[in-house]
Length: 91
Image (cartoon, rainbow, N blue to C red; front, side):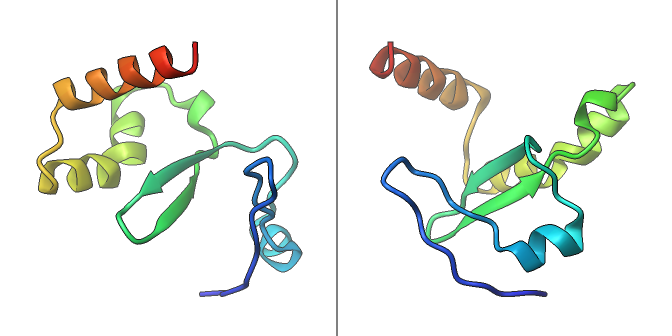
């Protein structure tokens, strides 16, 4: 596993170091899921998500996120309420 140090800009942007971008073949415009795991923030590339043709691919992509939510007791209702609160704050 590669470990690099980066910093956040005043606009909240974080640069993925060039060595990691090159080794993973990351290109401008790629999308990532951002997980807040308490004391860590994890980026997960969503490569080929738009090409997912069935629910199995969707399940595979998000299974680790759902497991984490379940172990923390996060329900569908919790997520819906959080989304509503965020949208209200940023409207």
